Length: 97
Image (cartoon, rainbow, N blue to C red; front, side):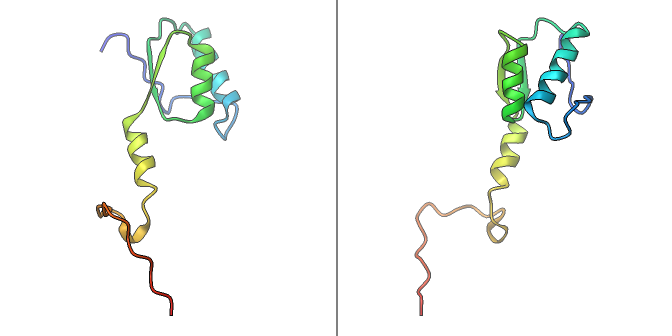
């Protein structure tokens, strides 16, 4: 596919915790190496990353990665109900004795 750059997993940010400064430095390094004309960035919704994209890639649209969205959504399930559909009605609270 022409014009597509996948930088996933191929970065070396100065910040190990993936903070906004680390992402900002990473994106600036890509621009310094010739990255231009970016129209769309697809990533997870990490606040530091999203802010860095907005600061360094003006005019680029941002879209949340569907895989990351689904993983985040599924991680909210509790172990006993994982994989089971949630009821469409509220459950009765347990009877205290």
